[in-house]
Length: 252
Image (tube, rainbow, N blue to C red; front, top):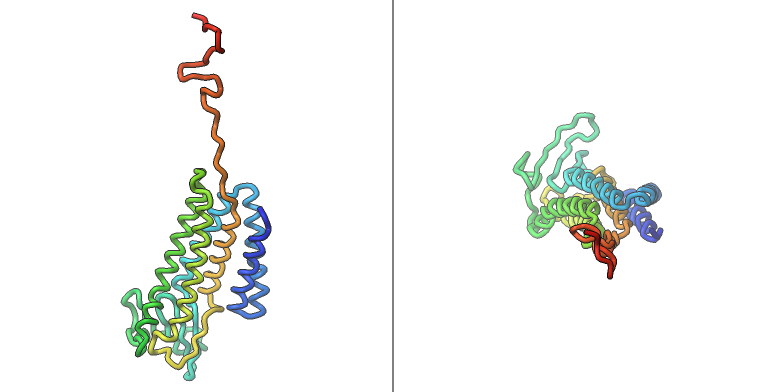
């Protein structure tokens, strides 16, 4: 297994860390990417299919957990704070207190207050993109599970299937982040004039971990077609028992 793809995981971790925490995040997530790549390589030495399945199951768990956590936040001039996730918005009224009252709303389930999630004027298209984030993350979770199942199948016809699924899951997760960052500030009336930052939250850190695990799963070599066991005829056997050499009559 070449080290080239492992270097790609490290670089991806560095890029995600830079996006979330600047220089500190670059070093931290580059180290996390290196750890994931090395651990995966060591496990894949003994069982490549199991290594891919384990990485993709962990990625599915991380992505599913991240789908309802905060991905972005913004401080308001009155001292309150907004926290946005793929499924809703939370307005923390007194963030400096241990127990603060929040005004919550969701756009995938009728919950909380309607006002914070009111669509901004001219923000219908952005709101549709924002609502698409959660289904895209769930699609990434599905691809991770499908790739884990495919990696455990010995059939040669499924060679590389888990790689395709892992790459698709990583791409879907990054697409979800891009959709969220581009639409959340434009879609909601309560966030107009507020600078919403994306990254540096628990949700985006878990999503980044899921992406790194998906990329690590791409390191697994494609299973080769098994040459198969020799047939009975090749071994000089027939369905009724051993066959006699040519020119020799079998004993009665």
